[in-house]
Length: 237
Image (cartoon, rainbow, N blue to C red; front, side, top):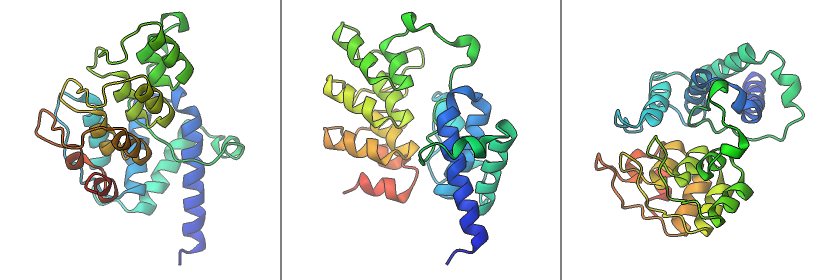
């Protein structure tokens, strides 16, 4: 049975992840990557995922943030996560108490303030990144290509999956998005769901016809880049 200290630490950690989920858009990319590493170490353990190729900058940064923690214990990872949140948001505990509990999903670094796009200039891809289902549907119905790549070689489905946004992924599936569309290094949305540990998105993609046997440019299938045995198990059923 966990000690009172362990239970208190776990509760504060969960509360911290809830706060980060609410304010992630206002945090800088470097901090988000550090939080991602500590979060994965605390919830999954040491990184055993295959190192992404150098071309996939986002995946490589996330992998490095996690992998560098080596054998850090769960307790140390939780404490480090909490310290980072506290340094960035000193009043986070008071603010987080009013939010619904949930686990943070830190993925692609958010845009810096000077790179923000006006709403009128946003594309379907932009709205997919930000999680606005009605905007995605509206622009798709007006003729925007839902399978279009952006300058990072990713489609709206890749972005929504990377963010772990089930509602946007479901919307894109309903609109006819190519479930097996590859990014610039040959990875499909299933690769993203597996490497990020988004089980709900992964299940949805599999249920709606995504192919778990597709290999990326390194010859890896989604199961080969799975972030945990549990995620790998969903791909081998």
